[in-house]
Length: 249
Length: 230
Image (cartoon, rainbow over all chains, first blue to last red; front, top):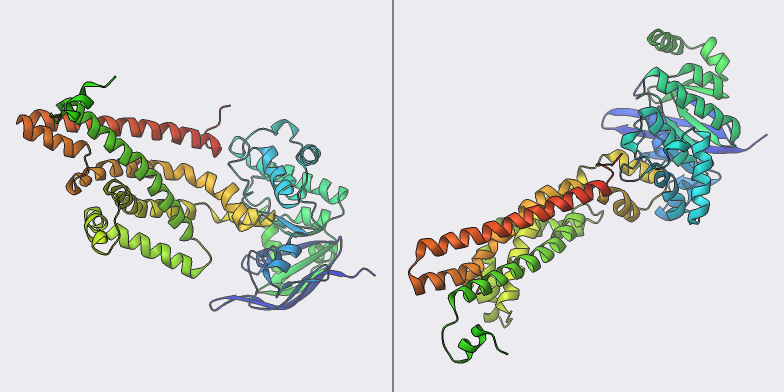
């Protein structure tokens, strides 16, 4: 029995009157691949943003790897945050740096990795995402799918324990989305990383995750292995949600 | 050994008129260059302070921008040159002039810097946090290089404004181009010709400055990855 790696205890968050997370409790084991699904506004992205410390809960307790992430002082936050990284819907590459620099900058500046080692690692990661030829290109010269693959490489260069993926294919057309999802499948296969993934790509959820959490209005209403949740959902709301997602495709 | 101008001054004779205009031009250029450097310091300090996490720092910067945007540069100049000495603070008139125009233009510049920093999409901050950059690293390596490009057109407008504002210093007897122009006009009575000369003089400096700023904009664009030679 592996211990819980990430835990949320009674975490609440509201924006004005709008309750985003309602006394949420859940936990993730090390190297688990979790997919968070549910209608928009149900709090999935909020969970990722809280883990990345881009957003603070109103109350509750969050721990990562046994260390408290919330509540915690700034130093502690910075230390715990270092174990995680995030890939965003809009890629958010740094447009003032070329592909190589986007990937090597943080490892060098934050982790103190020597330049030749950082470059070496970046080359390997670019191989993994299939973009070795684009090393010295700038983000504006890349397609959306390519930018997202660079963003994945940038995230992995930080050698995270936890990879947070926030609707990483939502801004891409289906063909480009497929190439990003292929890359993520390889990542999931080749790295021992804990993954939390918010997505509407149900095939992908089924392929890579070992657990699916269904969110609705700030609560988890159903959870279990993907074949159970996606193919035989028990909750009426989950059934309705999956029907609408599948119709869309 | 001695130039003609120096000789005539030493003998108590009037300096040649063209020499006066050239001296004035040199003073105006000095005021513009040093004024611009100091204004840039004020603008960047106050502009960054406006997005500080410390309320006090934000407050001071806000007070500075609002105060000096509202005050006429001429009033500030009179204060520095005439009022401060009466309080026991004697400033060199040239230094006082540089400070006065820099305070004024710097306040406008602070607003340019602040708004350019604020205009960088929040996703850039998020991404920097996600790779664990500190706030200072994020500003220096991610936000500023992108923001500078959008600042430059507005800052080059302000540079021209600053050049024009330096003409005010003739009112506190600093011998800039305008001041010397007045002297020459009084000595020769050729009002139209002298003022035409002033127009051309300021116009030429302005042209050179905006040319320089355009080159800078181009260079910064490359730095920020906007313009890429492919």
